[in-house]
Image 1 (cartoon, rainbow, N blue to C red):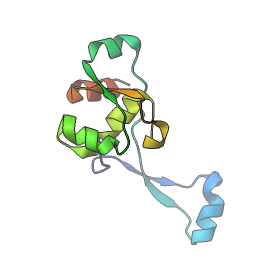
Image 2: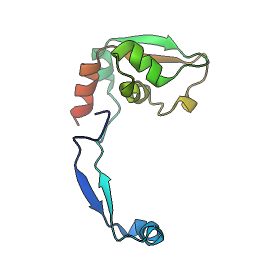
Image 3: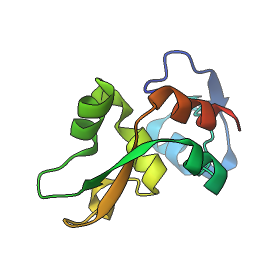
Image 4: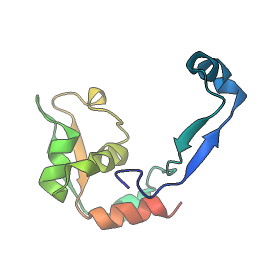
Length: 112
Protein backbone atom coordinates (compact mmCIF):
# COMPACT_ATOMS: atom_id res chain seq x y z
CA UNK A 1 0.00 0.00 0.00
CA UNK A 2 2.83 2.48 0.29
CA UNK A 3 2.87 3.07 -3.47
CA UNK A 4 0.43 2.96 -6.37
CA UNK A 5 2.10 0.22 -8.44
CA UNK A 6 -0.87 -2.12 -8.00
CA UNK A 7 -3.66 0.45 -8.11
CA UNK A 8 -6.04 1.00 -11.00
CA UNK A 9 -5.86 4.03 -13.24
CA UNK A 10 -8.98 5.91 -14.24
CA UNK A 11 -9.61 8.83 -16.56
CA UNK A 12 -10.88 11.91 -14.77
CA UNK A 13 -13.21 14.02 -16.90
CA UNK A 14 -15.08 15.67 -14.03
CA UNK A 15 -16.55 19.07 -14.74
CA UNK A 16 -15.06 20.28 -11.47
CA UNK A 17 -11.57 20.07 -13.01
CA UNK A 18 -12.45 21.69 -16.35
CA UNK A 19 -10.60 24.93 -15.49
CA UNK A 20 -7.47 22.95 -14.72
CA UNK A 21 -7.69 20.85 -17.87
CA UNK A 22 -8.20 23.96 -20.00
CA UNK A 23 -5.22 25.61 -18.34
CA UNK A 24 -3.09 22.55 -19.15
CA UNK A 25 -4.55 22.08 -22.61
CA UNK A 26 -5.86 18.57 -21.98
CA UNK A 27 -9.31 16.95 -22.18
CA UNK A 28 -8.79 14.36 -19.48
CA UNK A 29 -6.45 13.55 -16.62
CA UNK A 30 -5.31 10.00 -15.82
CA UNK A 31 -5.30 9.40 -12.07
CA UNK A 32 -4.61 6.55 -9.68
CA UNK A 33 -7.36 5.14 -7.52
CA UNK A 34 -6.44 5.34 -3.86
CA UNK A 35 -7.70 3.08 -1.11
CA UNK A 36 -10.38 4.31 1.25
CA UNK A 37 -9.38 3.91 4.85
CA UNK A 38 -11.26 4.32 8.09
CA UNK A 39 -10.31 5.06 11.64
CA UNK A 40 -10.06 1.91 13.71
CA UNK A 41 -12.92 1.15 16.07
CA UNK A 42 -12.40 0.86 19.81
CA UNK A 43 -12.52 -2.93 19.48
CA UNK A 44 -9.93 -2.86 16.68
CA UNK A 45 -7.70 -0.57 18.74
CA UNK A 46 -7.88 -2.94 21.71
CA UNK A 47 -6.86 -5.84 19.45
CA UNK A 48 -3.68 -4.07 18.33
CA UNK A 49 -0.65 -4.04 20.57
CA UNK A 50 0.91 -0.60 20.59
CA UNK A 51 3.77 1.25 22.17
CA UNK A 52 3.65 4.86 23.21
CA UNK A 53 6.11 7.40 21.90
CA UNK A 54 6.53 10.91 23.28
CA UNK A 55 7.05 13.23 20.34
CA UNK A 56 10.20 15.31 20.52
CA UNK A 57 11.85 17.91 18.35
CA UNK A 58 13.25 16.25 15.22
CA UNK A 59 10.88 13.28 15.23
CA UNK A 60 9.44 12.23 11.89
CA UNK A 61 6.87 9.59 11.04
CA UNK A 62 9.17 8.00 8.48
CA UNK A 63 11.93 7.61 11.09
CA UNK A 64 9.54 5.91 13.50
CA UNK A 65 8.24 3.64 10.73
CA UNK A 66 11.81 2.63 9.90
CA UNK A 67 12.54 1.92 13.54
CA UNK A 68 9.40 -0.17 14.20
CA UNK A 69 8.62 -1.67 10.77
CA UNK A 70 11.99 -1.68 9.02
CA UNK A 71 10.49 0.40 6.20
CA UNK A 72 10.08 4.14 6.28
CA UNK A 73 7.40 3.94 3.56
CA UNK A 74 4.85 2.86 6.19
CA UNK A 75 5.00 6.23 7.96
CA UNK A 76 1.36 6.79 7.05
CA UNK A 77 0.23 3.85 9.26
CA UNK A 78 1.41 5.74 12.34
CA UNK A 79 -0.18 8.97 11.11
CA UNK A 80 -3.46 7.17 10.30
CA UNK A 81 -3.64 5.32 13.60
CA UNK A 82 -3.21 8.53 15.56
CA UNK A 83 -5.54 10.60 13.37
CA UNK A 84 -2.76 13.10 12.74
CA UNK A 85 -2.07 13.19 9.02
CA UNK A 86 1.09 15.28 9.12
CA UNK A 87 3.90 15.95 11.54
CA UNK A 88 2.62 19.52 11.80
CA UNK A 89 -0.31 18.04 13.75
CA UNK A 90 2.01 16.71 16.48
CA UNK A 91 3.72 18.92 19.05
CA UNK A 92 6.71 18.10 21.24
CA UNK A 93 5.42 16.39 24.38
CA UNK A 94 2.42 14.79 22.63
CA UNK A 95 2.18 11.04 23.12
CA UNK A 96 1.35 8.99 20.03
CA UNK A 97 0.64 5.28 19.80
CA UNK A 98 2.53 3.09 17.36
CA UNK A 99 0.84 -0.16 16.31
CA UNK A 100 3.47 -2.86 16.64
CA UNK A 101 1.84 -5.46 14.38
CA UNK A 102 2.01 -3.85 10.96
CA UNK A 103 0.30 -6.75 9.18
CA UNK A 104 -2.68 -6.64 11.54
CA UNK A 105 -2.95 -2.85 11.15
CA UNK A 106 -3.00 -3.27 7.37
CA UNK A 107 -5.68 -5.99 7.68
CA UNK A 108 -7.87 -3.55 9.58
CA UNK A 109 -7.43 -1.05 6.77
CA UNK A 110 -8.37 -3.61 4.12
CA UNK A 111 -11.50 -4.67 6.00
CA UNK A 112 -13.41 -1.70 4.59
